[in-house]
Image (tube, rainbow, N blue to C red; front, side, top):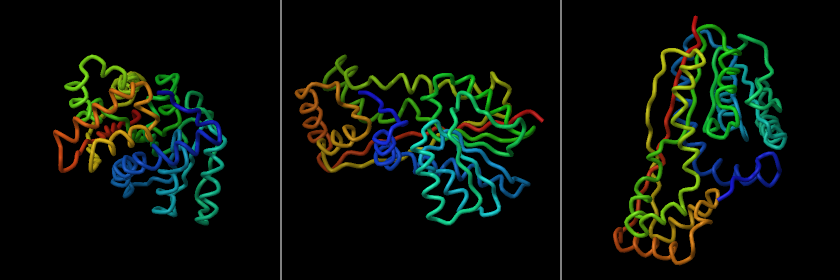
Length: 262
């Protein structure tokens, strides 16, 4: 499995049509819900870090027309998609900037709120990125970030381990992203965030048969690309035997909230 470069047109389209369509919007709903509960306060400026195609930015800008939303992403292609969507929706409360999350070049203490949806595990310098986020927040400003839990797709991997034993490692090369995800709360604390809160949210995915599960994983960043054909065939058959009426597995999102010190 290889993650495509989202800096390219091909990579950004892949993200938008796969991860950005299958999972990211559903996780964004949980994150936006967390953000929305604070909007009875005096919040004017919000920053969406690694905004991708604008899943969060555009939702917030539409929902709260008096809010000023800034989205940053290292991919010019993604930023162009954001701008095109904002123009199509006739939004005048957004701005989108090409900017690496590892080096946030924005004024200190300029944002009331910050959100980052499913991007943290992809940062090459996670601590540096979070330090930059802390710096641009106003004292007392809030951050809401989402990452996948290690229990994501747990039901599938339990079946896979029963069927192929240690060979399950063929289809787990992306676990390093889960390792990075688990570091999020600690990284927030390390750079000075306080009042850390963590919540878990399950998103069920149901498939009629084993081949449907394999097709889904192949869509999603080609997760099964390292598995030999006999392993994939055995997995599909095992799921069909164990779950003849359909198979449900869960994507588990972790929402981590933090606050910059007053």
